[in-house]
Every structure is written in C-alpha cells, then in structure tokens.
Length: 95
Image (cartoon, rainbow, N blue to C red; front, side):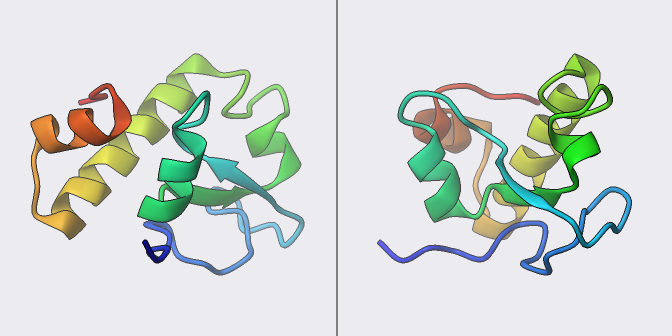
C-alpha cells in the first residue's frame, strides 16, 4: 500500500517552532503502529526540543495527548471516517 502524505505536511521544519533542524516523529508509535503511522501519514517533523527535550512529545504527556487527538481529527477528516474506523486501524481512539 502506498504511503500517504503527512497530515502535517512534508516540509522539513519543526511544525511547532519552525526550526530547520528536525527529527521525524511517528505520532502513533509502539509495536505494530509505527508502520501504520508511516503508511497513513501520521508523522510530523519536530525539532529536538519538541521531540525528545523537556518540552518534547516524548516527555510531556499533555503535548503527546494533544498531538494524538489532533492527528486523529486530521486523519478522520481527510479519510471521511469516524472514531471506530480509526480505532480499528490504530487500536485506540484519542478523541
């Protein structure tokens, strides 16, 4: 199955602060979900601070929860599908 474009765009800048020094983050990681994130465009470029730093998605639960819900909303809108469809694909709903 072909890879869909990122729901956050493919421009290699941090989608939070605009820094050109970025790392690719899979919004839904973990066992079995990373390839699905890749295929469905659930990836986002983040600078190191917003990815792995103290304020980053891997350290800040509120940020991580917001990003997961936001990405789910974008995916459902693009695909014309609902929470149950998302849950079937990713194993959970974040909205």
